[in-house]
Every structure is written in C-alpha cells, then in structure tokens.
Amino acid sequence: MERLSAQLNNRRTREFDEVVAPLERRSRKALDGDGLDDCLAAFAENAEGFAWRADAALARTKYKNSLGLLVKMVRAGEHRVPPAAPSVADVNPSTGCTHGNCIGEEACLYA
Ligand SMILES: [Zn+2]
Image (cartoon, rainbow, N blue to C red; front, side):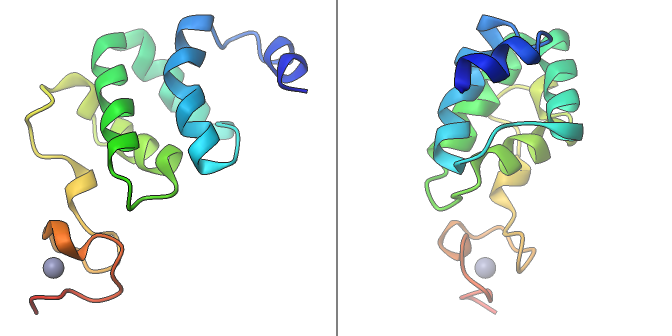
C-alpha cells in the first residue's frame, strides 16, 4: 500500500519521504493536496530548513497533527529562516496566545 502510493506520487523523492514519513505516522495520514505541493516547494527551496521545521513539528508533542503544523510553518516561510526565529508553532491555534503551557488548551491559562 505504502509502496504503491509512493510509485503513484513520483514527485516525492526518497530524501523528502525520509523527512516527512515520521510526521505522517504521527498524524496518521498522508501528506497530499495543497499541503504536499507547498511542502515539495519548500523542500526544493531549502531542504535543510524544511527538515529543521519537520523536526520542530515532531517535537511539539501536544500537536497530534504534526503534518498540519509543518504545513503551517512552511506557509509562514519558516523553512527559510533560522530555527531560533519565532515559529507559528509557538502560537496556540485556539487562543492566539504564545504561552507554551497553553498549547492544546481551549482557552489561555493566563488570560
Ligand atoms: Zn496563553
């Protein structure tokens, strides 16, 4: 199954797969559609920066949807900037705040 989809999607290289596969396993889905297109473009543009952000997305264990987080980072252009720069991963998608303890919470714990 996995091999078949890899053959069908010949735009994905082995190098790209190695970066993305752990996030697909965590998210329990395949990277496809616009997210795949954006990630392929980011990988072509800056493979090292893309890999940094993929690692960062995996490290945010409170986000089960690692792929969604990576796509968000890529769309914010974070594959082009040093890893220490502020990341969209530090913004709570529900509350918009940047407290680490609030990631995954419905409301800001400090509001
Ligand atoms: Zn907060």
